[in-house]
Length: 146
Image (cartoon, rainbow, N blue to C red):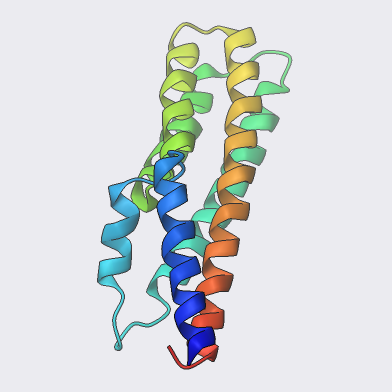
């Protein structure tokens, strides 16, 4: 039983650190509250969809920015989707970069867009590894009977 309590405490501390460091916001709490016995995989499913979505959009952004003539409307549409997607799971830092990214699209600022793409890719990979750790910890707790 001790091991389980330990795991649960680690999970609480880890989650708190993600909020504290601004990786996640209140929206993630709301997701967790929607998960119950009837839908035990809810958070995993939503987060997995976010990963798939974000990776597809980051690819599109990269492709669009790699064109000799950049379609800023298309670029902005992809950034807008990524912003919505990150907001829906509470990935606050990704969301924040998307706001700045959309400003660069509006100004048709290629340099700014490239810098934002780098930043958003970086923030995404950080939050992805943090969330994967979080989900793994939850799995361990479930496996331990928690």
